[in-house]
Amino acid sequence: MTDPSLKPVLVIAGPTASGKSGLAMQAALAFGGVIINADALQMYRGLRILTARPSLADEEAVPHRLYGLLEAEETCSAARWAKMAAGEIGKAHEAGRLPILTGGTGLYLRALVEGLAPMPDVPDPYRNSARVLASEIGALALHARLKERDPVMAARLRPTDTQRLTRAWEVLEATGRSLADWQLMKGKPFPARFVSLFVMPEREELYRSCDARFLKMLEMGALNEAAFYQDAPIDLPLLRALGLKELIRHLKGEMPQNQAVALAQAATRHYAKRQVTWFRHQMQPSHVLPAQFSESLWPKIFPIIRDFLLTD
Image 1: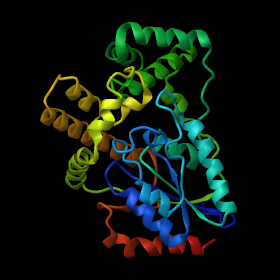
Image 2: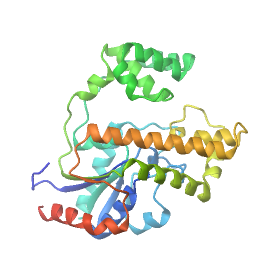
Image 3: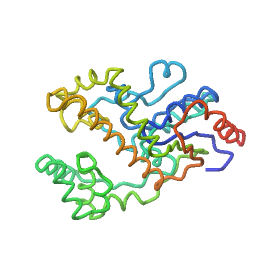
């Protein structure tokens, strides 16, 4: 990681609504960077507003990669993302630009920076059986069953996350070992020299930002985005976008808009809290910014990145 013969990569991570995208823009403008997405939902073409993808103006101002690539029904694993990100890092270096990885999907970043744990090949019968079970009993019941046999993995997963619950169940059935055990195994890190900046505001500041950003999304047309997906299959990966399910329930007449907004804001705050916990325990950053990023903080951050690049 500190080998000066390796080429530099800047990592900017943190919870949702922390300002990390703004920091990535500043760094890209100052140091000739290419911004490479490390947010699972921003990989999708739909829901630009609700997934908080960079604006068209930002995408025109500096190169952005791995945004809006996937169709709504596609899935993207950490391994698939890491392979694509590695390719974009290589292209950036070849062009003489600084690769800047930014996003809040910690597992993606760890897969690249630390190396992805070797995952077992699950035979089709186990995979199919897990999918059938999930379809028959539903996510909540599957989570309850997983909690009985694998409480460690169950504690890491939301009871409504059908996709990840199914994956955890099929691995447990096929190998007799928890997916958590497999994830502890070490992989091969990407050959680069990393510096990581984690934007980690205090809780109340972060929660205020989460609430305000969702209101801004509504002003930008989030309801129109949600309307396009109100008849989509419930297991569509893109439906994990924060606030989407609540807005769809409002559009279907199941709740008033103010209730949907309050629930969506609460879901966003809970997700941000989980992200903070994950980053604090699962990755060791080079530097932590204990505040919401704003341009006024840039003069403090600029020297960190400059000094990192000067060691090349």
